Amino acid sequence: MASRGSMTCSLQLAVLVSAAIALGFGVRAGEAQLSSEYYGQTCPVVHRVARRVLKKAHEADVRIYASLTRLHFHDCFVQGCDGSILLDNSSSIVSEKFATPNNNSARGYPVVDAVKAALEEACPGVVSCADILAIAAKISVELSGGPRWRVPLGRRDGTTANITAANNLPSPFDNLTTLQQKFGAVGLDDTDLVALSGAHTFGRVQCQFVTARLYNFSGTNRPDPTLDRGYRAFLSLRCPRAGNASALNDLDPTTPDTFDNNYYTNIEARRGTLQSDQELLSTPGAPTAPIVGRFAASQKEFFRSFARSMVNMGNIQVLTGSQGEIRKNCRMVNGS
Image (cartoon, rainbow, N blue to C red; front, side, top):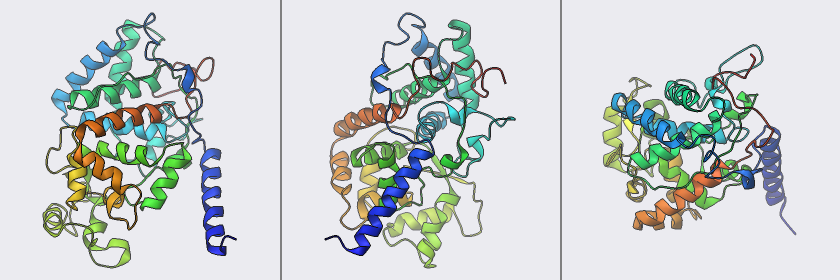
């Protein structure tokens, strides 16, 4: 017979999953209707146009590839990959952009607007904003030295946003159990969790997401004991106690703008920048630890798994067929 504690834990997990579904997290519905050739006849230039816009944006902003990849992630984890993160406030929309995990943090919206404008000129009313996010993430990873994959397309755009669900996105402060619960609620497993976390191999993070590990980990007024002492000293110089909370640091201190497997070797050296990074290895008995080791040992294995997990994530509760719409403007629902 299960103990009272284990029954309580199981009940809490069931409530969390049920709440996630109620908030619109859902699992990978409609994935069979997506196809990498979806725009083959209606907009065959879709990848070429998006790539041109992204390469131009990167000339002015070296961070943009990582930011666009993160934008796709933050979209898919909230009521599925429907472009809801792109919607601005309106009389009927409370924008996800102002949820705590996104506000002054998620970025790249003007570049998505530019891709949309270019595609509207080439193929009016054809390519959804949700698909633009998936394509932009794919191209961003490729142009940063990462893997290539055929991204399934055919998503349609949602007409609602969900700031409540956006406030429950996976957090840099989450422990491993919470991360597993949040990923599991959208149909993603431990391999997906470790592989998708590998996107932290490029991009930047604000000091506000690091300082607790440096000075007051879990309310102890001490640093996180899993953090390498030398790396902690380096981060402390970058993020002093009373410093600028918005100051930026490289997520990967070795190759910050290259998509590679150094994220995992950093974790093995106890140089995971975020608590959620180091949790994958340092949590006692972590089932994710062997996956970290496998990806650290083989970039090819990481790339293969990352591509597969991006497809898995991109299939979360997609709208297809007559569901949703193809927005004319990614920031607003048609007719608003």
